Length: 212
Image (cartoon, rainbow, N blue to C red):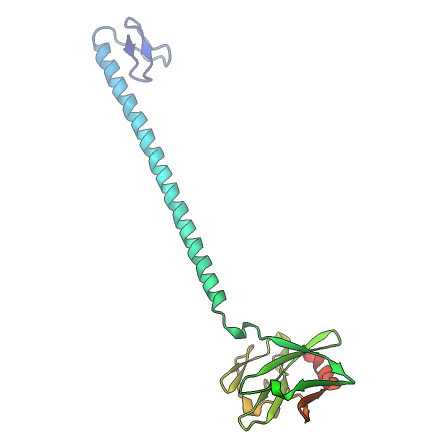
């Protein structure tokens, strides 16, 4: 038996051509050598195919690892940003209601230098406002909106003794809250103190509904 040098098919020793591929064959002893060469070449081709497949598998695995690692790091970064996003990503508004046309809030709730945020429902809108103490201890009150940026509906955040507009980043000293008006100043909200309660007229809050 001999082996075709072109396709590797075994053929009769006396055959003049390969029935599988049609290649002409030389007769005689050299056929054994040709068969050996054909088997070696066939083995080399098989090894090359196996090597290419192995490289492709390794490359695909590496690419998958890179994608997984990148996505994982992005997710971790997003989670970190979310976890460290600061309290001013959204202040807590305490809901209040009116009785006999008046909203009453205990004076004791406004202590220290921290601001307190409240929300009152008027005409289907959430009217937001805040109360605080100025440096001299006087009570200050304002809507959580301004005439310049109210359409953004972002309000203010406190940073030390200043209030920062979340839309334009303009800063205002807290001693001016409830006194200065216009532009990006917080819109003053009239209040008065009755015994141990801060009193706000519901109609004043309702008038501010257009800013929310």
